[in-house]
Every structure is written in structure tokens, then in C-alpha cells.
Image 1 (cartoon, rainbow, N blue to C red):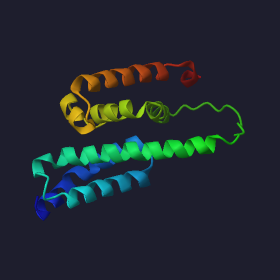
Image 2 (spheres, one colour; image 1 turned 45 degrees about the horizontal axis):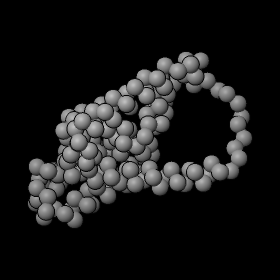
Image 3 (cartoon, rainbow, N blue to C red; image 1 turned 30 degrees about the horizontal axis):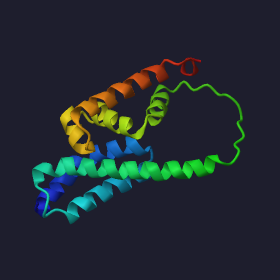
Image 4 (tube, rainbow, N blue to C red; image 1 turned 45 degrees about the vertical axis):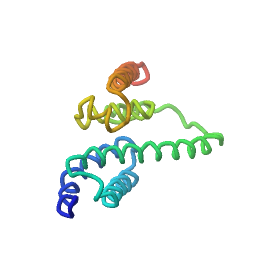
Length: 161
């Protein structure tokens, strides 16, 4: 891969990787770091990676980095949640986008990532399988389970009140 190829990849794929990482991580700074790390890894391996495989490599790298960050964050949250929290009171929330994002955030990491790749980024089942390392039937099952979970969660009475 030449420098021009690398720069072309940055122009073509950085926005998509950022959207994916932002949806996975829910934090703009973490998403920006994720994108930068993904492109840094591509630059380091530019001699080994063909330009036609760069998009898949970048999304795979972003996916694995996101999973690692989620695991680190989950461990941190478990420590923070060990302390008692005072609940102020119930306040209904009518922001649909926020409700959907909250429901998506409750999905297991694998289901969340395959759902985002399919529904937000428009990848085929085969491409998602290549990015995540799952086989195509597993990808379909995880997407189905994620959609069932979201359907149940979004129709629950807590969101309607």
C-alpha cells in the first residue's frame, strides 16, 4: 500500500469507522482515539495489507479495539457501582433517540456490534462475519436476537410512561 492509497483510505473510511466506534463506545473522545488507533495500525502494516482489504482491516481493528475498551469500561463501572447510589426519583424520558440508544447500549457486545455493522453501516452478513470472526449463521442469529431484545425493550411499559 502506497502513501496515496493510505491517504485515500483515510478519506474514504474514517467517517464510517468513526460512526461505528461512536455507536459502539458512546463517547466521542474514545471513538476518535479508536479511529486514530485503527489508522495507525493500518500504517504500521501498510506493507502487508492490500488496498482492497484495507476497509475490512480497519473495521476489524476498530471492532476489536471497541470490544477491549468496553471490557475495560465495564470493569471500571463495576467498581464504581459497588458504592451506594442515592436515587433522586423517577423522571420520565420522552426522547426517542435517547431511548433507542439506551436500549442498544444494553445489548451484549457481540450483538451490539453485529447489529451496528448491519443496520447502521449496511454491511452484508458475509462482510460482518469477516470483520468479527464469526461465521455467517452466527451473525444472523446475533442480529435476530438483538432485534428481538430491542423490540421487547422498546415496547416495554417503562418507555411508554
